Image 1 (cartoon, rainbow, N blue to C red):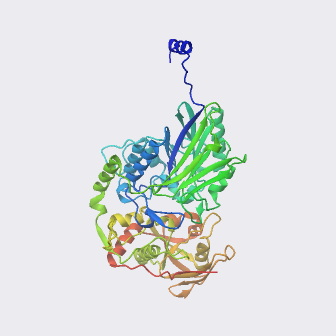
Image 2 (tube, one colour):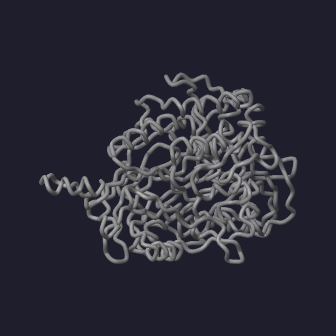
Length: 551
C-alpha cells in the first residue's frame, strides 16, 4: 500500500489492514514409499483401524489426490518425506532405477526428504545421480531420454565423509508467508548395518541426537526458530489405529525425548508403523512425533501455528493426524499417466508368467516368526545352492518386501499365476547367494543374534533346519533343539549354509555370519525364486513347523 493511500485511509478513518499475528502452515509427510506406484497388494496395501478392521489403502495416484485435498484445506502447506522413497521397489520403478518414483515425487511438489537406508542401496554415487540427474552409469537412461533428478534436497545432517566433511545437506529452509521454517534431516546412525559395506564405503553416520542439536543451534543462530525434523528411524507398536500411540519405546522415542527442544515436530520412518504421539522434549514441552506406516498408505499431517513476532511455533496449538490414503477418491490424472507409462514400459518383463500357487504366500505368519513365504524363499535358495554343498538356507525377513497373493484382480478372483513382476516385488534387491561354512556352535550363535536390543528379527529357514526358542530366556540361551536334516547339531561339526551377500557381510546385526569360511558364490536370490517356482507348480503355503516358540 503506497504512502498516499495510507494517508487517505487515515484521513477518512478507514481501517488499515495489518498482517495477522500468526501464520498457519500445514505439513504433509509420508515415509517408506519404496517406489510403490501401484496400490500395494495383500497386507502391504491395508491399514488397520482402531477396532482391528482394515481398509485398503495406498497407490501413488490416490496419494496425489489426497495430498491435493489436504493442500486445498489449508492456506499454506509443505510436502515432506521421512525417507526410503526409493529402493526395495516394485518392478515398474526398480527396472528404471526408481526414476519414475522420483518423477512422481517431483509432481507432488516435495519440499525436502531425509535419506533412508534404502537411498544407499546402489551406493553414494547413485544417490548423487538421483539428486542431480543424469543417466545411470551402467544402464543409461531407460525410462526416458533424460533424467533431471530430484527437485528437492536429500538431507542427512549426520552423514559425513570419513574425513569429517559433510556428505549431504543437513537442512533446508522454506519461507512461509515471510516466516522461515527449518527442515532438518537425520537418518539412523546404524545405517551401515542395513546395507552392504560397499554401498557406504567412505561414509560415516553420526549420533542422531547430536546431529539434531548441532543443526538446530545453527538454524536458531540464523533466526530460524520454527524447526521440523525428518527422522528416518522409528518405533514398533502394539497395535492400534493410525492415530493411536501404542508404541513399544524404541530408538525414535529415545531420540524424540532427548533431541533439542528447539525442534517443534518430528516425522519418523523406517519401522513401517503407524502412530501419532506426543513426547515431552528435554525442556518438558509437548512435541508431536508421527509415523505414517509405509508404501503410501498414510499421510502424516501436522498443522502448525507460528507467531510472527517470535518466528517460533506455538506448540499448544499444534494439531496432528494420520490420514488414510483411501482408494475411494479419483486417481490423480498426472500421476496415473506417469504410472501407466512406467507400467507399460516394464510390462514385457513384468507380465511374464513364472509359476503358480494354490493360496496366498504371506510374509507374516505364525507367532514364532516363521512365515509361509519365508519358508518358500529359503527352500528356493537351498535348491539353488545345493550344487555348492549347501545343507541349509537362511534369509533375512527384511528382504521379503510383500506377499505373493493368489488373487489377481480387484474383485479378488484368484488364478494363482505368479508373474515376474510379482516375484520381483517380493525380492527386489538383487542380492547374490553365498555359501559358507559355520560350525554348529556358530550356527547357534547366528540364531541367538535374532534377539537384539532394538528389535527381534526371525530369520526364515529352509525345511532342513529346525529348532525351538524361548523369547523369555536369557540372551544367548534362547535357542535349543537345533537339527539339520533331522539330526541334532554337533557344536564342533561343520555345516554349509546358504545366505545372501547382505547377511554374509553381517547385515541386520548378524555378525556371526562374517566368521564363515570357504565362501563360494551362488545365483541372485530372485533368480533362485524364479527357478524354484518354475520347477514346482502349484506351491501351497507350507505349515509353520520349522521354528517352535516355547514359553
